Image (cartoon, rainbow, N blue to C red; front, top):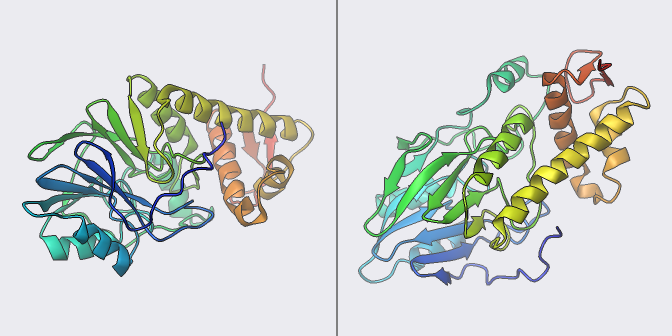
Length: 306
């Protein structure tokens, strides 16, 4: 499944998607954000702003301009604490008086494995994390956030980062960076956890969705196919890593260079982090082990299987 090449939305414009829902794309295009961060405005009177986006005055003005007569921002919901999603929340709250709602701070939701890795400080990570983020209200998995004419169910979907949530709006899901409309997600330990990522995919598979509205890229209409692709994609990467390790021990940078042969140089660092996440997952499943203390440069080899 290739990313759509026709997604070219007007930046800073509140684009109508369906009744009660608009999208404003932030002016932060990059190799990691595609056209920019998708900010969603949900509701017709009391509005929820989902993922205000990066610290950018033009984007703040675009969001405020989308609030029409008889409308007000009642909720600011942050799906996760990356710098392209959460920092503008505080400025928007100051302008509107709405509370900031999220799963927690930058360390919330980490698995025990990743908490232990983070404590060692040797696996790197921390790319693009909004370490200063603090929500006004913390929500838990399964909690309901309700506005005047909309209801959202919180679905904790860790993997891209531990505090990542998706939001169910009837048969629609705001998937943020878990399921994107143009690429698979970066999973960079200890903030990201591939074991959690796969479990979150499988959890979303259990429900019938009409459409996904992601944090980057176009809406996803064939939701089942997209989830199948994400899972298959990660499993194919796992198979390639196992095949490479069968030829001899290697570290994450070496494996990434050998496997991600069509990846642009600007994204090879992210690919290396994804490989490290796969290696940690393989280690947790007793399929691979590392020779030296765990780090991005640690040498891994296969564990013989019975």
